[in-house]
Image 1 (cartoon, rainbow, N blue to C red):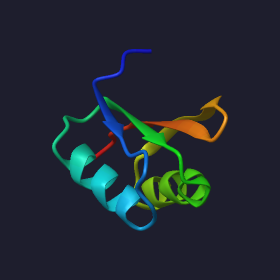
Image 2 (image 1 turned 135 degrees about the horizontal axis):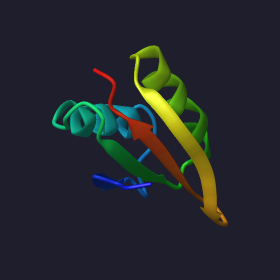
Image 3 (image 1 turned 90 degrees about the horizontal axis):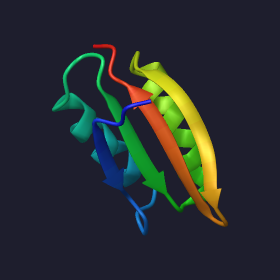
Length: 77
């Protein structure tokens, strides 16, 4: 899968993780994929849920290290 943009949000907490992710995806073209890196456990649940509520396509949520996750989101609209 091709990643078009990556946003490293290590050290950030809710709600800033979603706000910054949303601002990034708004700058992207439909069909592009955003990879968001998170280290705050509540954001791992909240960011994908918020993207789905916004109508975006959450492709995956993967733990990539101890206390480090990636969320892959495709811009739908």
